[in-house]
Image 1 (cartoon, chains in turn brown, red):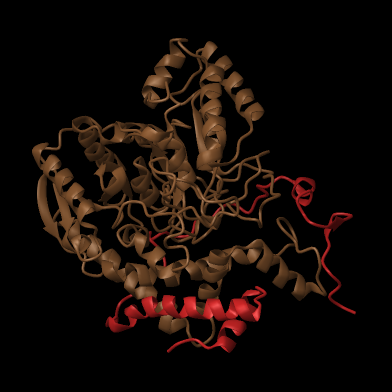
Image 2 (image 1 turned 90 degrees about the vertical axis):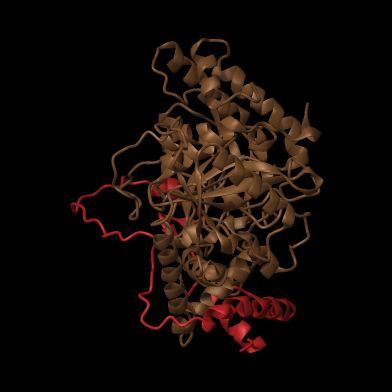
Length: 486
Length: 95
């Protein structure tokens, strides 16, 4: 059951081979056994999960089940969840029990899925290693000395360690895809606007996008069917007819034009990662895809532009944390201003404070044109690169991250080195394009490598098609970390 | 152009984040590293490029001017550090 696909779990539930309560208990037991070592979950509440599982069992008995009814799903602790503590990995929200559900949570509840718990993450999703959490770093199931990537590292570690069959994440600059790559699981960031941001605690609103994390592309398609959809409470939610993201899974890849950007195979790429990606490209060619060289000449500027735009938006979004309406408030203060200063100094960790300071600076009087406006122009150049590339190819494929997982603490003191982890993932966020990562091999110390797939706007079904066909021909996505077997 | 310690203090003031002198010195070094990275943008000619503020060309939606939220004041205020008679309390601002 721990290795079963979502379809298999759904069938087992429908055939009464297992109840949702039993299935939920199975994953809760595994979580309580492994979480001490991996720290993938911030909050687990067995009583709440089992109550939902019993309700799902009733629904199944009544013949009212949908594909995800009774299946436990772990949610990144950035999605506010009614009655559950929702911390966003921060001390600032350590006492925040949400009075309402995020749209994504509503969707999973309506589908009859069970909330398995809230997963650990970089504080306010700011990080690429899941080390900046107030609740301690997440450990990579493939090697506890290594980071799982971030910011959705709790969700990807939970999937890798088989503590959950499915999970949610969010991706502002790579926060679903980079940890999926480093943890050896599959993760998808949809086209901007496809999944509602309502109740998803805001980091950089023009970039933030929620998406699914699972063991396979087939599972991702099923999860995206539940997560995607118009929501009038998100002003940038896209109004589109509902799609079945599974519809192209079985299409042959013959004739598919796979674009390979030479800029993503340059100096910073570890040789072992490049080797695994080359092997994956050869496999795709064997499946009938046609390899097309493409150029993304401005993609090298994505990290600099991102570190203006994302902190600028964050400095505005995070101004709401002032110790007045919710969250942490400093115990002692002289006056109102002092209360703000102390509350925010105490409630935010070092990386969050640093990004707020960057954002405040680039938006301040006299610097706006030199930084913010300039970054917005670079953003246009990066988006235009993709417009040109997608005239020559259907999907773009390359490495998700330049290296395999690094050691916990290795980059914590050097923000610039940490930021460069997202060099291949950030361009899709800036352009608003869908992108995903799937396992495609191993590098040094048997650590996983991720294959990055970028599609044109709303081409999720085609991306999942490529990923599924690749996963039918290979078994990288079925490998599980050896050290954590029960 | 590197930032100065005074600028770090001024930014922190604008952001309403308290920083000690020792922290300001650490942050100064890190911010200067980050702005060196960001500075790579300046080498690119972007004359005439239309700034892009968003990944999608969306129009803002309009809706009927109707009440869509229900009253949840009690639930929301139960999360606040300090409330009294339905009001959020902050330290005295006017003498």
